[in-house]
Image (cartoon, rainbow, N blue to C red):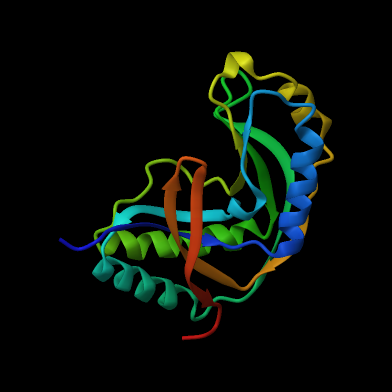
Length: 190
């Protein structure tokens, strides 16, 4: 039986943005209690999570990703608003928002999704909301300081140029997921 690996397509973040996210995280840690914080190296802008896939499926994903970045031009994104999913009443995920040229990002993702669906990959049922997961909340009743942190603003990690997307492998460990980059797909290169 062929090995399956957990994979996802994402925008990888530059080191400076990860450092900015880490500063935000460290500033929030003493203020917001009850959050399992994501390590900065594990933060990325997910475009599509595949779950477990085979080698031939990875080849198809690679083909689709290459096709969709061939004519893509670089665009700018900003990281810097704090929020929760599904909302502050029952928070499960604490996130940093993505602003900037999000229309370009969403259009690129939509084209990728269309091709993935055509190739038989399952698609997300919910709308795409670009964000970076800063932490997870297991028990909404135990979280403290979250509403104040969200309303305070001042959570800017910086701006960056997106000029590629990446395919990652995700390995689940007791200490959290470990991500390994499989391949980069640079814009404008076939």
